Every structure is written in structure tokens, then in C-alpha cells.
Length: 61
Image (cartoon, rainbow, N blue to C red; front, side):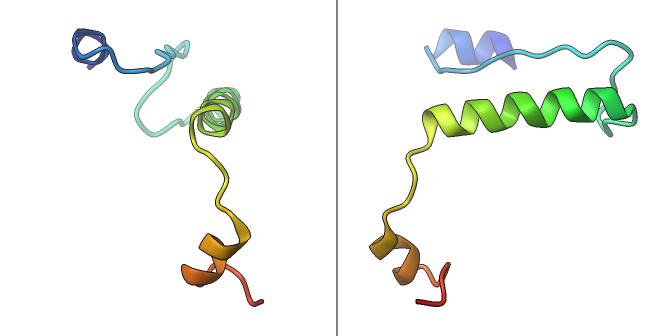
């Protein structure tokens, strides 16, 4: 998949975890994966404005 993303000039970060599996069975790997995913999403997804959150029903205001 990383090769295809490179072919299309997409932004991504390839993370290979020692003894990793698709289920993130090792706790250390879960922490690393979700830390990296959180940093990636915070960098590339803009926060919703308050108005957008209200329209989407994501707030009680």
C-alpha cells in the first residue's frame, strides 16, 4: 500500500512495529500506533469550527 500511496504523491507515514500484527496484540505497539496516528491526524485534519460541530450534532450547545 505504501508503494501505491507514493505513486499518487499521497501524504502518509509508514510504521512497522516489531512483532506486530493486524490486531495490535502487543500493548507497546498499540501505544506507538495510536500516538503516531494521533500526531498524523492532528497535522493533516483541520479542527471543526464550533458552527460545524453544532451542525453535525457533535455538541450540546
